Length: 439
Ligand code: GLU
Image (tube, rainbow, N blue to C red; front, side, top):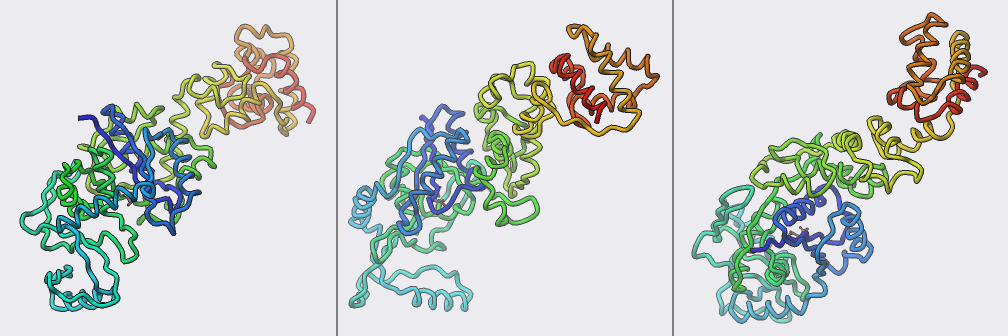
């Protein structure tokens, strides 16, 4: 059996970490098993769905490398939903209902008041049809046996269908609710695994009966625990944390994905350079039942750890044309974001602002300039420079190194000086030392 998964967002907003995580898990599971990952755009709600969000979702997935093998849109499949709906109607598995929302609410309150489960009560087949009212439609659950399924994350799940209301699948105006078209499409697309949030567990119970009623085999389910902000409930802020934000912050998509792939599992979060790396270790058996805690700070930490291990080949496209592999290897341990590279690259091959030094420091770097001028830059220039300057000035340690670092890089700290000095070249070094001596 070839694995087919789908990610099914509604184009009523941008993707945020919560649904990016679901997309990622669907993608990784399919990738691990050599299967297909489908993007199903759930745009049955014609009023709230927009072409812009539809586009933004596709762009965001693409930017993160979560490219779907296939894209379908529910709004283009209404004919199929209609056909299957008729079939279920003929078989008596969907039926017309005429209650108003107020009547239903009242009944609910009465049942709750009596301490009974607020389950929808079916009307007898010969109940009178109220005049002038269009029906909405419910799926008739089979009450005869419990609904049991083996969730890949939650283990055995068991529901008594008598305690579930027959779900409404279609409104008076003919528009669809989510449950039934989702199942019809899952059948048609040959979905083998449905991976989604645990808020869908009881939907799955009803949907399993829909798969059966359509004569199809139910897919396997994996309901993941929800994502919460490290400090509490998935806050508004986290709801707006998505690809757009990460992109604007200059964070690598793989940093966010590395975090989202592993939080809430028994595996530790490690920076992964590729989706294949994440897919290799992906396993629902490691997923926990407790909410996964998401912390944007963790993404930033993973981002710098990721940059520190990325090969030149992985980043060459993003670097200035003149940047060499040596430049990258020298500078990468110092980067928190990719955007830190540019300013460091200028330290090697561009200009830096001369620092303001104290009187003694100025004298020291002036001597340094004179020594540097005469050095053979091909053999350990930093060692020679500091060695000779130590001798002539009698200074050592921080007193010696700090003014040199400041003058040569314009910064208090950074990568090891030997590499920097070697790569910036003699002319640049001398110029900087002289400039700092004069300021
Ligand atoms: N559009 C549904 C949602 O976003 C899809 C749920 C599913 O994966 O079946 O909740």
